[in-house]
Structures are given as structure tokens and as C-alpha cells.
Amino acid sequence: MEENWENRKDHSIITAALIFLLLAIVFGLIVSRQIYIGKFILPFYLLVTGTFLFATSLETENNIGEWIASFSWTLNMFGLVLFYQYGTGDWESWVYAWTLIFPAGPGLGQLSYGAVKARKDPFERGKILVQIGFGLFFLIFIVFKLFFQ
Image (cartoon, rainbow, N blue to C red):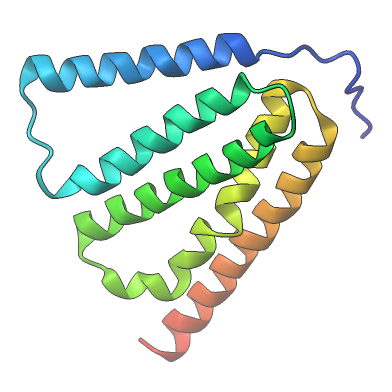
């Protein structure tokens, strides 16, 4: 199935504005309700930083935006893995969870950057990295759970 990338629109300003609005609402709720995050403070700030950097990358017009988007999703995936591990105490999951941080994280960054900015090259590169990352995750997960549990 061939998509027409030339006719797609760039929705980066709307997406960045919505992300910044979401971050403002989250911080407003935390401050106004005096929510104590506790042990989840590191994953929370990794997610907030990654989300902020992704929104910033959408407003960058040269190739550095793609690099920033890749780094931001690496931070987001690291924060999500830490949320899972802090919540469950499953620290042994580092054996297979690292594939979500490195190959899949930058891949999700390039994939989402390409989709929002209507650019085919980063989208295709991101798709390949995401497939490699999640493929390695499931392969290592299955081997680890079958043979080393």
C-alpha cells in the first residue's frame, strides 16, 4: 500500500501546543492537589523531560529535530520502564527491558516525528527500529522466561 507523503499536512504546531497544554495541566494538578509522587519521582521527571523535548523537536525545522525526537522517546521509554519496575519490584526485567529503551525508544521518536511532520524517511527508519526493538524484547523475554525462571 503506497501512501502519498507529498499531500500530507504538517501538524507539528497543533501537536506541540497540545503536549505543552497537557504538561501544564499535569503540573497544575500536582501543585494544586499537593500530590506526593514519592518513589515515582525519577520516572515522572524522565517522562516529563522526554515529552517536553519531543514537543520542542516538533518546532525545529532542520535535521536536529529528528535527533531530539529520538532522544526524547529514549527518555520516555526509560521512564516507562522505571515506572513498571518501581511499581512491581521486578528488577530482573532489565534483562529484556533494555531493548525497549534503546532500539525501540529512538525508533518511536523517529516514527512519531515523521508522522507528525509528514516526512517519509524518519517514519520508515523509525518503523524498522521499532520492529527490531520489540522483536528483540519478545525474543529475549521468551528465552528468559522459558529457560531462566
